View (cartoon, rainbow, N blue to C red):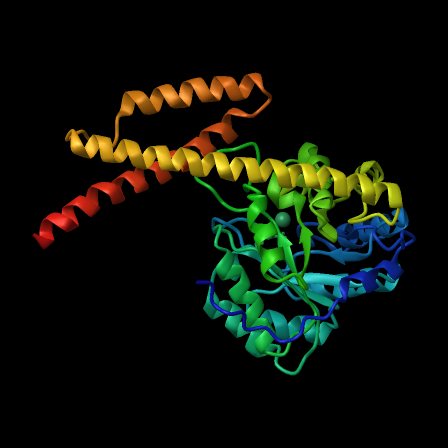
Length: 379
Ligand code: PEP
Ligand code: MN
C-alpha cells in the first residue's frame, strides 16, 4: 500500500518564467541555464550575458557551494558568488537560481535575494538535511526545485517534496537528473525514466524539469536526452553552459557554450500534449480502440497460459517432478527472443517480459505444490 501523500497545495509558478524570454509560446519548455559552478565574476557574468542574448533562456543557474565526490576538488567560491549572480541578474533581467544544502546556504541566498533555490541530488538523499532546509524556509514562499536523490528511490524524492510542503513551500518543481548506478551505461547517471513518470502519476500537479547535463555527463548526448524529456511532457530543461566548457572547474565534459546551447534548443521539436483538430482526435480514438482490443487479447492469452501452468503444476506434483526445469526455461527464452527479434521486438523487452511471465508461472505451480503440503499437514 502506498502511503498517503502529505502535501498542501502546489502552485504552478514555472510557466510564469516564460515572460522573461523572447520565447513565450505557452508549450515551449522553460530553459534554465548557466555554469555548473560560478568560478570568477567575469566567467559568471559573461556566460549569463551570452545566455540572455540568445533570447531562449528563462532563468540563470550557477553552483556556489559545490558538493564534490572527493575532497580536494574545487568546492565552489562560496558567498561571494551570490554577488556575481545578483550582478548577472542586473545585467540580464533574468531570475537567478542556486543550490542550497544547509540552513546557512539558505540564509545567505535569501539575504542576497536569490529568486529560486534548488536542492541537489546528494542532499535529497538525506532527510536530516532536507528537514534542515525546510525548517530554515518557514514563512518564506520562495520557489524550490528538488532534484531526485542519487539512488533510485521515488519515496525519498517524494519525501523531500512533502517536507518542503509541510514547511509552507507552495511553489515547487522536481528536477530529474538521473540515478547513480554501479553498472556502466552510456550515461553518467541512468535516467530510469519510469521513476520520473511514476512521480508525475503520483503528484500530477508537480512540474518536472529534466537536467540532461547531469544525466548524460557528455555534451554530445544532451540533445538526445532533452528531446526525450520533452516527449515525456516535462515542462523544462536545466542545461549547464560555460563560456569555455573545456576549461571549466567542474563538470567540464558536459557543459556547452551559450552558442551551442542555442543550437541544441533550436533543433528541439516541441510537441503538444494534445491537439484540438477533429481528425487528429478521431484517428487517435480509432487507434486506441485497436490498442484496447489487443490488450484484451493479451490478457486473455496470459490467463489461458497461466491456467495451463497450473495444470502442469498438478501433473508435476502427481509425478514427483520439480517445478523449475532449467533446460525448458532456456529453450523458451531462446526461441521467443529470436521470434520477437524477427517481429521487431527488442531482446531486452522480450527477456524482461518472459521473466515476469515465468516468475508468475513458478508462483502458480508453487501454490499448487504447497496446497498439497497444507492438505497433508491437516491429515
Ligand atoms: C549541479 O547541478 O551542478 C549539481 C551538483 O547537480 P546534482 O545535484 O544533480 O549532482
Ligand atoms: Mn554540475
